Structure formats: C-alpha cells, structure tokens
Image (cartoon, rainbow, N blue to C red; front, side, top):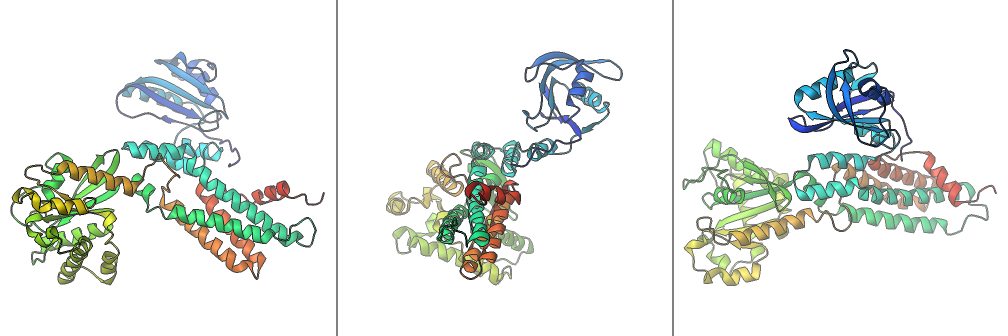
Length: 489
C-alpha cells in the first residue's frame, strides 16, 4: 500500500450527474472539510450519520437549501481525508448556489477531473488497478462490463498481481541474502535452486495470464464485429435485422454501401461495435475503391468476422465438395487479390490476413435460403453448425439461430467476467507484464554465472509488476529479509 499522504488542498465538486434530478450530491475532501461544514451548516453533524440541515451562504447568510449532510472524518472515507457530502435538491440553481458558497470559503478549490480518486490512491485507499476499475465502472454500458469492473474494483486483479509481486520480492530477498551471506551457515545451500523454481512458476502463471486472447480488454473496449462479403449478398439487411432499425440503406443496386456503417450495440450484456462494409469486388470507381479499402482494413482490425455469402451460389460448399476451412482460405485469398488489384495492400497487410484464418473468429452466413430447399443444407449445417448459419434476411428464416451462435461467439471472445481468474483489462498491464517476463527470462540466463546481475533482473521484474498496482518501494526488500532471516541474531 502507498503510505498515507494527506493533501493540503481542500477540493469540492458535483459528484452526481449534471442534469436536472431529484437529488444532487456535492462532495468535499481535504483538511478544511470540517470548516466548510461549520460555515455552511453552522456546525458538524454526527460522523457518518445523515443529518437534515439548512445550508447558508457564509458571506451573505442567505438560505440556499434544506438537505442531507454527511460528515466522514479521515481516514475512514473514500479519499482517506476528512470528507463531507451535501445531498441537495437537484435543480441547477440549487447546485450552482451551493457550489458558489463552497468556493467563497478561503482554501477551497474546485476539484480537477479524477482528483478525488487520485487522493484515494495517494492515501492508500485504492491501488492503480482499483482506480482504473472505478473509471471502468463509471463508463460501463453493459452488464458484462459492469461485472468485470466491479470485480476489479473489489481487488481481485490487484490480489493476483500483488501475489506475484510478493513471490518475486521473496525470491529477490533470498537471492540478495545469498549474495551477502552465502558463506554463513544459516543460508541454505539450495536456496538459489529454490528461487529459480519459484521464479519459473511465477513466470508460467504470468504467461498464462497474458495468453487470454485479450478477453478482458475486448470486454472493456467493446468487441469489433464486421460483416463482410461481395456486393448484394445482404450485409446491410443483416445489420438492420441485428440493430432492429434501418441503420443502413438496403438496395438491389450493387455497391450501395460505400463507407463503413457502424452501430454500437448491447448484445446479451456484451458491448459490440457492429460494422457493415462495402461489397468486396474489383472496381474503377474511386469512391467505391476507397470503400473497399476501408472494408479490408476493418476486416483486419475486427475481433469477429461475419462472412456473408449468397447461398444459391455455394453449391460446392453445400454439397461437401469444398472443406469449410478451404472455403474461408479462398475468401481471404480473394480479399488479398482484390487488395492487390486495387493497389490497396502491401506484404504486411497480406501477412496479417494469413494470420486471420482461424474459424473461431469467423461466422459464415448463407443468406437467401428462401430460394433453396431446406434439404439441400440440413446435412451441411449438422456437420458445421458451430461456424455456419443459414438465414433469409427477406423472410427472417434462421435469424434466431444466427443470433444464438453470434452470442456464443461473443461470449467465447470476451469470456465470463464473473468466473475463473480475473482477466487482464488494460494494455498498460500487458506492457508491464511482458516486460516482467523478459526480465525473468534474463534472470535465468544470468543465474548460472553472475548472481548479482540475476538479482538486478529480479529487481526490475518486481518493479514492473509494482508499476501496475502503484506499489513501488525499495524498502520492501529489506522488510522481507528481516522477516524471513534471523541475520545478526
């Protein structure tokens, strides 16, 4: 934990929404909180008990409002400092008058964005992962985002990272003890072997945490889902069906969609950014060419691709003459050919396409099933039901099955935020953990011929994990040494 550090500023701000509401909450934090209560309410209420008080302007003595007031003496408050809350009537005039009254008190300052939470961190009430979770919870728009943020704010991710840091600190303490006291009898002979085994265990756990397919980050940021295919296969119709509104123009004229049409959705509690794209084909129209370029770039940046095709033109696929994986590869190859012919791509882009042929991130939608007999596709769907859907955007046939499979894919890609080990949620965490693993690998490389350099790598690894939670202190190593070893007894 970060040591308590009471600020010298007393800050105040509206902590609830800024629109008209029944009740608005104004928060004050800092050493002058008690003085502010005395100036506006005429005295201090009982601590942590809601009290009805009349609020007065301390300059004009004008009555401002009759509200609930709560007094939180530090350190038992959100920020760890003395705090006060005014639960006033939510009209803009009332809120403005109370804020003006608070600002008229000497030593009171309007809070900067995030300043209350920053004080909570500086005073050891929250670590950095919990601070980030507060922000994520405020911005959560879906149920799954809420669950993930709440779990992180409850300290699950902090506990995981702190356990790794504690283990590595102990390994560092043992290594430094070996360097300083290996000639004394109270240092075990196999201490470095024990340290090496423990470092390997922690490194393996971190690597497993990193290989989570970005589930937590996808859930926090929203899953990018793109509908892609040739012109006039029904991409815009499918987008409208999923959105349940006419978000995109539907026309029998090929090439109607020129730009990427985006819509943010809440699908079964998961945040999704759904994109309709221009039909993929070779064209000399400069506007459509740019649309195809944007479509290809969106395919590359997407988490889940919905390949939409005209069922009536896929006789080889439905008959089983073409394997599903070969069908996907051929579609990716077609995109690369279009990219080359339109001079849109380069080697890096095509290499990126080659890496995106995994069926787990693809749903193939056979549209216009109303033009075929159901017996033609029933066997094919039984064999490939997890990845393929047969629908008719015109009649609605198969749409419920498609939505079920879409939700299942989304759940797999985002994970269940309430189950298992907490997920990595920020790219900042990933960067520091990758650096930590790099230093742990170098620790093993140095251990056999230079223990001092190996210890330095451990110190750097500890620091990387500490930077995630904000717990970085040189004194921690000494604390572990004196607790675990009876040196100088």
